[in-house]
Length: 194
Image (cartoon, rainbow, N blue to C red; front, side, top):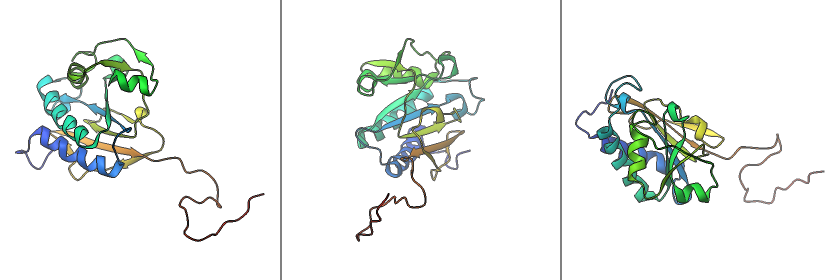
């Protein structure tokens, strides 16, 4: 449960997302995946009490931080649409994502995806994505849409409304063995490789 019941859902979202944007280095060219159970936000079990008004408040917070940092957002649909993602057509085409055909509604796609779809200039659904970071509001399981390697991030506030919040950012895979170097050294310490 949230410690500060007087803070709006929008403000809670802004606070957590600003933290994630900084730690994840979100900016132009980066993608954030968002999974939300509005049921969980209002204190109900996932899938039992979705609310478009709740989704609208969360969307306002997400859009505010997106405008500050310049990243793109993909909104995960619920399992009834196979966790497809609501994205702007520009992002779908830029990343060459596979488009799938559906229009999310609260009962099939979820309230958050439905509200996000209706707020976009040219909305469409992508089958999957490899996002640079993600925020999961209500334990909706966004991991399938994160680039490898995901690094868990625990924001200072762990709830939005009544929903538990998890987040992650990604880093490149570390390759090599015991001789691998992951940061450029200031001195010339090269070792020839056979």
